Image (cartoon, rainbow, N blue to C red):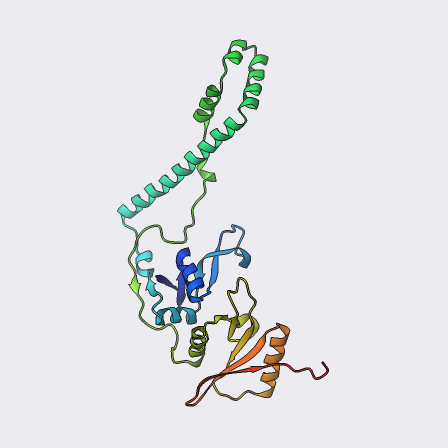
Length: 274
C-alpha cells in the first residue's frame, strides 16, 4: 500500500486501501474530495482521504504502508508521446459516452414505439402522405433515430479520477513527518496500540478524540488532553472538564512520569446537588 505525500502528510487515493486502513487498522483520516460541482461539503466528501501527520507516521512505523513523493514526475512537462496517448485515451472515453447515450436513446425509443409510430403516421397523413404512413415501421423509426443522433461534446461528462490514470514514477519518502519521540505522538501511538479509534481533537479543544468503535457508528467517548508534565493548573482543569461535560464526553489527561511511562487520568465533573 502506498500513501501519496501532499502538503506534508499522507493522502489515500485508492478506495480499497482506504477501507483496509479504516476497517483493519482503525486509521480514520478525513475525506477531502468532492463530487459536488457547487463546492465542497463535509457531508458529501469523497476520496482522496487526508491522514493526519500522526496517522501517517504511525502507518509508516507499523510497516502498514509506504509514503511516496510523486511531485517530481507529475510536475514534469509531458512528452509528445504522452500527450498523444492522453488525447487518444480522452477521445476513447468520449466515444464510450457517445455510444452509451445512443444505445439508451434507442432503447427509450423502443419502449415508446407504439406512441411514436402513431404520432409519426398522423403527421404523415396530415401531409397527405398516405402510402408513407402505411409503410412506416418500427425499423424505420430506429434507423432514423440512429442516423440523426448527435452527441454534444460540450455536455459530455469529464471524469475526475481519484487515482492517476497512468503509471508514473515516485520517490520513497524515508524521513519522519513528526518527532517520533514527542509525547503527543507516543500517546497517539499508545492509544492506537490499545485498540482505540483515535482522531484529531482540534474541533473539541483537545489533542485527540477516542471512540468506542468506528466513528461512522459511534460518537467519541473521551477527549484526550496531552500534558508534558504531570501538573495541571486549576483553571485549566476546570475549563477542560467543563468543556467535556458540554460535549458529553469524558475528560482524560495524558502525561508521562519519569521512569513510569505514560499515565491517563480521567476527571469527571461532580455535582453535589444530584
